[in-house]
Image (tube, rainbow, N blue to C red; front, side):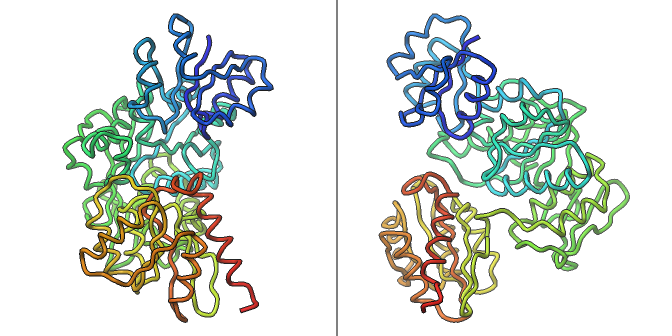
Length: 447
């Protein structure tokens, strides 16, 4: 067979490397021609430009793999689909690992944390496990093919689910759905429908683990797998959080019991309640020893760039939440704090509804520094509700300096963009690392 890889980002690059290691012939395409350089040393690799792809029209032995970030409106994808079927990167990986026990996690927010948490729980339980996928920082899904583990815990995006054919997890987890990626999907309705595809190919032997409020979603048409629900509000769910007792409960059959008190957690808790509940249910399905589950939850410190406390100096706390890439996540992040924060927000515009986010900002931020491609739009929205405590920064460094300037002892400076990073940065990791670098620079002991 021959392979055409459209998109040489993190996932696509890994697949190309895997194919070349196995002496397959690979054609590579990406808008960024710089990405071809690391592959030119391979004799079986051929870089193709858009016009050259047409020459592959008559190849019957060609498999076309499309990276998740490239949507179906892309001219190259449209052209290829005229003469050939395409598959997603996750479908390609699945063809190699379908006999393993796959736990797939999706949702608008919390995917990475839940993937990592479940992976750590299974490791502590001495299970033979790989965890990764879209998880960043982390290993791309193709590593599961190389490592050949019995359990594979994979973070899966809506982009990937949009193109699945046979992909089927033993346990599919859907954490939540809110407005996101409307620059990729045609509508919010389509986005919801695609998220539900994680359960599409499951059988009676499989499990659907889902936020209970999504059971009533019009696109939830799941009948075959066993359904287990979790909720931060509804005590009839199979796993729930009791706000009064401040405990997580398991509710399976006639036996209801608490498994953990919120005060026992090390990492910032409130924003992760859904992630914890989902992890508890997955652990129960996979018969993890309860002591290993509890110890994993107690010792988990969260992931970088997710409400990460990076420095506390002279009473000021600097928190890096660069992973916050949509307004819904921005609202959730703000709701965690009991007092008003100094907020740095803004990034690449995704054409998402902003009303609820702007309302949350006005209620939870004592001062706002707007930074990024959409800072002018955010400024207009704040003025519309008569909120004037803001500043427009041209650079991230200027934003952090201004945040320090307007803050005082006891304040929280929260870097929680609520939009994508692609206006100025390669990804949220680079953005978060830059924020940390700037904070350390301006908070040197000289002041």
